[in-house]
Length: 338
Length: 116
Length: 159
Image (cartoon, rainbow over all chains, first blue to last red; front, side):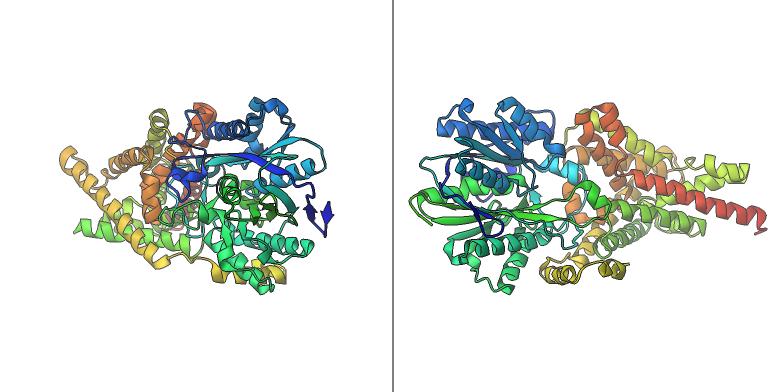
């Protein structure tokens, strides 16, 4: 049901039945290794290209999710997924091997929450019984496409971020025992004329702040309604900018209740500069870490605001500014009611 | 003494590059292209050769020397054949860097896999 | 140019950029320059060692030792690039490892290795000079312009 200007309330409370998270060697050494179902030692996953390795991770995330829910893939109506690589190559190929009816979704690194919001909305309208939603990224595949060859010696400034190698998948269903997806806010594209592709956190911060403001306004609630507001991959720079922006707009947000997946995923002593990024970042940290905290009862209500930078290599070379987006989805422990 | 000046002059040319990276926010491709052009102009003015005599590898190892040797090759042929020599003599002196990079690039692609 | 760019921005965009810039982690320019100086200088020092070696062992002259020195440096770069070390050095060294000819070698070799997955012709062959191409193109073109001017001045200008 539409609420306010750009938000949905899911009154039938679709459930997240299970999740699957896959990571690479760098994530294994990170801050939250327990958030992953499988961690790979080899960046290549025995494949002959980075793109195929990413495809393999997405396939594994889907399989793990199904196995944990004890559901056959024939019972899944739709798969909604996306990634960052040219025309979403890894996702399309993974969708082909899984042979589940497929909807491609692209919001760059905000794909995780776009797919979750769409899945919950279809489930809520009884358009399906089971929907899988997923996002994936691979550090080397992303570097190769958006920046330089992986072995090229380019110095990265302190504002740049480290793309997460991994895949995250969630199974959304009509009813079940998992946490409930209760509402979602679809973000507008924000363009502040920022052109530095090595400072995406700073560019995306405005999109996160806009979407959080819109969500609170549409639902007529206060930030204190949530135990945590979790942004996708703003990193240290973007987190600070968006936090100060929200404070500037008189939104009483508290610093200890405002966290970022890109900061959560890695340890401070890893060479990730401003933090983690990539489509898998918010998917893995949300599904593998914060959602588990909701299941354990440590958190009651969370708002996940995945952020995405919608530029391409073409737009950067043509000196176009970086358009940014953020989508918010709220997840609550079962039993709680709005 | 040449070792000391190689270190200092080579290091200083790199500092110029670093300032172009950090202060003018240029990409590596822009920075290196400008340095090569600078090397060509310096040789045109006749200032690069004395620098090589003074600093040895400090002037021949940085990418600026690439511009210098391209001009040198062109000028050598130009002395013999006039203007047409400018076009044909370009790579006379400077083939080492490009050919070595291409040869070791192909060999590298045969034996290595990117580490990520 | 910076001002011209700024004029095209809306006032709210300008405000945001100023707001953002205050919170952006600054590049440690001075520290980076020191590191670039030390590592860049060290690479040239190694170059001088190699070139001295060629002069004394293989009867090269000061002038002709340049080419084998560069080839040797690029060979070493291939090993460092292939074993995944060069990009780590570069994160510290910045221009210190980009400006010496080893950086040129690294740009060519890393592209060649990376695009191996697209095959030897369309992958390695087409993409090898993707990063280093501009250096060759503008090196050649600027040398052409400089040499033309110089030739005209010396041959017809009576200098």
